[in-house]
Image (tube, rainbow, N blue to C red; front, top):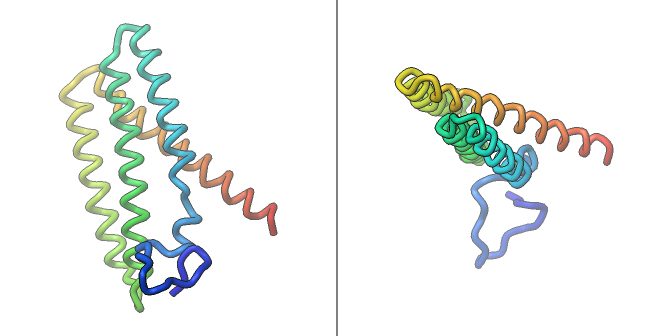
Length: 144
């Protein structure tokens, strides 16, 4: 199997994620955008007197980043096998999303009103990842 467009020598460690999965989501841009939005959230929420909402917004952004990274790892593991299992991928996603949902609901319900920041962070991260993925797709289409 080829990784990153070159064949592997005996001394090189193979990346667990094939090239087609790595190209889908490069995490540098979403990370930088999430960091910038997190700083902005902390500043704005601090100025409005709800710094805890900003902190939970940053936690939501972090959960979004973690979920995306775990998705990449999960897809990489499944696609490396001879017969990829959609069922294994689905159960992996279900478990991940259940944990993230439980964390967000727990914080949102028990720490009112500032706990809503975690939902805002998760929502903003989804916008970031969609924008980043769309930009990559458009760039790829223009190169063809």
